[in-house]
Length: 175
Image (cartoon, rainbow, N blue to C red; front, side, top):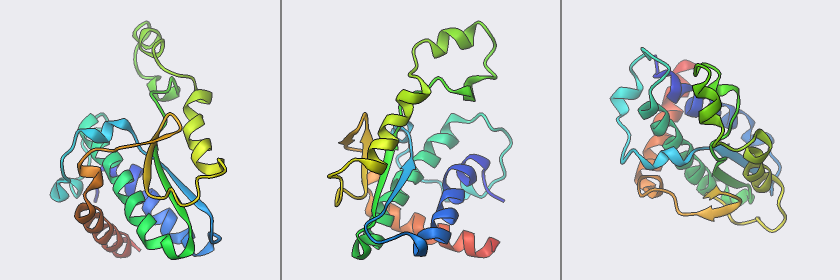
């Protein structure tokens, strides 16, 4: 009953995290992979999210799901602050992974030529998960192992709270 990309990229991780959060030790970390693509949307069309997917190739749907990753991370940071559990959202870079496999050759070879390797794409995730000294830098958005300013929409606290409220209701309704 949800748009596939939003369900996969936001609702799945939201439900997974909700199910595990009581088992995460105080002082732990939660890392969510977002994308620089979150800069496109200025808000979330709640009705659009409830429409079943007709295609898995919509970049617009992907962008909204990645905005949701950052909003979720920001709201989660506020909720977990008493437990000192830090949350991080990040852009891994444009990675030459197998996700591009459906692009016909030779275009795939040309497109991926300008992308980073899988190992390079993992650097910021690993940095956020393990780097000493990041305690307390919770709810931030990272790119190239640096905290950077996300889009205006990703900094909207009311939008983050509304996404949380709706996500909880949607997950509870599906349980």
